[in-house]
Image (cartoon, rainbow, N blue to C red; front, side):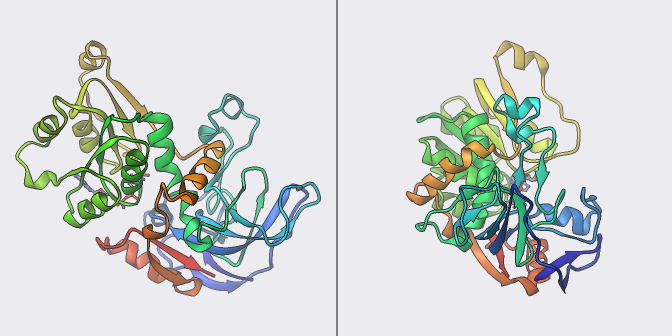
Length: 342
Ligand code: APR
C-alpha cells in the first residue's frame, strides 16, 4: 500500500510503499476513504513533540473508510461496511473506562501517535470503538467527525452541559471553536462567538452564533458580553489555547457560571479563588470524546442537525499531503478543515 511516512520533525512526509496490515483476531483493517488534516500533526512535524510510536510511522487520526478485512472474533463488521474511526481508542478496563470516563482512559491509543495512523491506503485498528457511518453522511467528509466534531460535542454536551436557553460564549472560532458554536446552537444555546479574525466570525454566524464580537474592535470585551447577556454568560468555552484568553473567558461569566477549557495552554493562569467560592463558579477541562457519544454525533449529522460537509473546505490527494500542512501553517482564514484522500 501507499503511505505518507513521518521520519521525524522538520522533514516533509515521504510517500512510500509499505505492506498492507493484516488484522489480529480482534482487529479490522479499513481501506481509508479520507482523513482530516489536524493542527496536532504540526506539533510532531514542526515543534518536535514526540510521537509515542517511534518514527518511521504514519500520522493521521481523523479517518473514515470501508472495512477491508475483519479478524476472526469481529462479528459486527463485514467487508465493505462504511465506518468512522475515533481519533482515540480506549482500553475499556481501566478505572476511568469502567466509570464512564473513557475519554480520559489511562491507556488511550491515539491513531497516528501511539499506533500507525491514517495517512495511508489502509489502517489496522482494534474493532472495539469503531462506528458504522450511514449512507446519508458523505463518507469522505464524514471523516472529520472523528475529532473536529467529536471533541466539541463532548465539551458542549458533557462538560459545558449546555441547556436550551443558556447563553454560551465561545472564544476562538477555528476548527474546534466553530464546532462548539454549532453544537451549542444545535442543543438550544444562545451563542456569542469571539474571534480576532472577522472572517471566522462570519463563519460562526453561518454555523449558528446569534452575536459575534471581535475583541480588537471593542473597548472592553467583558463589558460587551455582560451587555449582551444581561449580566454575564451562563457558560464560556475557551477554544484558543492561551492562558490570557482562558482568564478573559472566566471574566465574562455570571454568578454560578461555568468555564470550559478545550484549548490547550501549557502555562499557569490566575483567577481569583474567592470569586470561585463566593459566586459558586465552575472551571472544568474537556478532552476528546467518549466512544459512547459517537453514535449520537453521527445521528445528529445524519439528520442535518450538525453540518459536516460544509466544514470541509479543501481536499488533497494523499501524495499532496505536505501541501495540506503548508495550508495549515499559512492560517488561511477561509480554511476550516482539509481532508486527504488516498
Ligand atoms: N482572541 C480571540 N480569538 C483568538 C485569539 C484571541 N486573543 N487568538 C487567536 N484567536 C482565534 C484564531 O483567530 C482562530 O480562529 O482562535 C482560533 C484558533 O483556531 P485554530 O488555530 O484553528 O485552532 P483549533 O484547531 O480550533 O484548536 C484550538 O483547541 O484542541 C485545542 O490544541 C488545540 O489549543 C488548541 C485549541
